Amino acid sequence: MAHHPSFQTEIEFELPKGYLDDSGTLHRRGTMRLATAADEILPLRDPRVQQNEAYLAVIVLARVITRLGTLPEVHTGTIEGLYSSDLAYLQRLYEKFNGVDDEQGFPTEKHSAGASKMPERLAARGEA
Image (cartoon, rainbow, N blue to C red; front, side, top):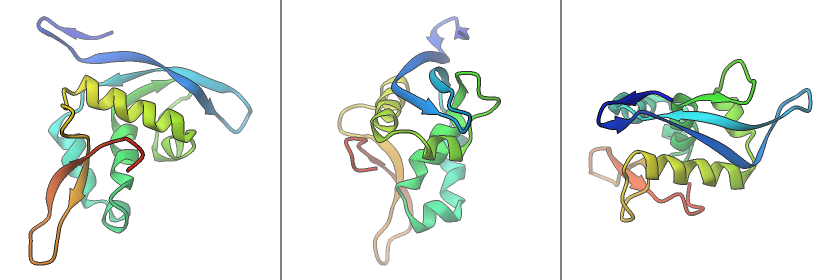
């Protein structure tokens, strides 16, 4: 686990159910790194997020999960293939690890007519 002298930059986790890959291997243990501003801002440009703001959670998690079992890489397809309880677990872990308080949640894009787009947080309690 990588550590800065004053704070932790990575955290290990174990999924409640696990990701089942195409060969039938179950992957449960992984590592998540601390998110950067770019991890939350750059995915806002992705057309999948512009069509469905809940997809931001998928992209952000794919960026910050550095290892999942013996998978060679973690990408959006991997996150899409998670069981919903594992996705919710990772969203809560992300929020806790990145210091998001209870009034906020997973980053998403929110805008209304006449207003410019601005990042807002969306709680991971089944809303993403």
